[in-house]
Length: 445
Image (cartoon, rainbow, N blue to C red; front, top):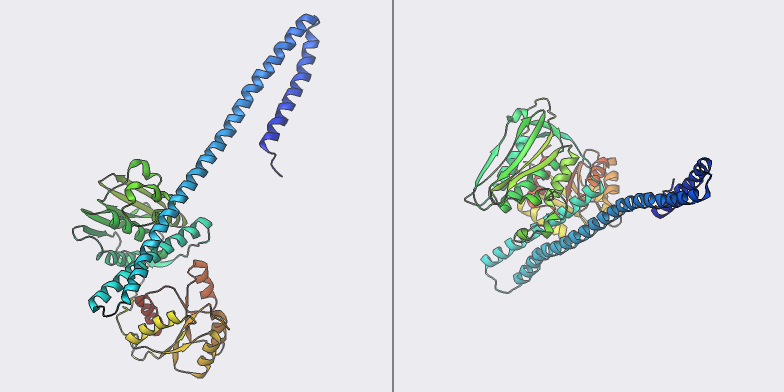
């Protein structure tokens, strides 16, 4: 049923109350009073009584309604202000690495450039590219969380392996004079739980990134403990801390953009909002305790859902050889720059490959060559896309393993890929080690 507008509701209420009051009050007065003069006076008092009472009622109704409108207006203005500040900030954060990429790419074109300078410029380009990719990933992640287009994929995962991986990843970038600690309560064989390890990793990674960014001296400590059938993860530091007035807002998206004391630090202010969104998806809670200039401690909990003990799986290092007889890998890619990148990786890793520009050509190559042991398949291509090509290849070579490589990085896309007959998935842009790692996984089977 369509809701009646406020102005119609209040007018209708006024008329109904007034009508009921006039009819029944007049009948009561006429029943008890016969004298016309007294009746006239009482009619006047009755009118004033109605005016005063309805005035008070309408004042209260209007006040309540206007307070809601003013609150909504304030929130809308605040949201617009934060979004404007966020857009200004993200523009700065995107243009900064882009300036490094474009500027140092142009410098590489300089003739007779010394080798050490080339190496230095390439390092700047790599850092700027990683910074730009991190910004794009943050914006994409918060968009998925806000729109509800993200799902939880629970699986058996070893949280000790995750914590060790994060410790070794961050150890080289923690400032030299800062003490860096990891605390784990479970032993390795008891650390298997059912959870979405990707979202769990992202929360801890973002919290550690902030700790490293905002801590110039002292310590950084992270880990987990068991409390009341829950796992409580924590990241603690002795950094700049957070003022009490901001502690209730830091998990809101865009909140960082307006803070003057954060302007010296890079980032678009979405990391903690992503942490909060992922913690909610994992049915957990996240909180912070902090004192300005004395440090912060972030904690979040997830349900402890243990897996029956099993032997730890030893993962292949990306530095180990792919296989004694790796066979040939078919690269199916229509973008020349992407193919050249993969080609250089394979050249240095001494991996044989065949190239196909589209899905149709890939199907024909798989029919003619029996020594292809793995296919690296792009999804979006002319003539025949990767989905159709994979379906046709699987019809005559069901045992041939096919890895999808695509710029579509959404979680739903990954699920769709794996349900369409692909054996693996890697999202663009990927790094050398990531590509070699997934190839090692499938070539060693």
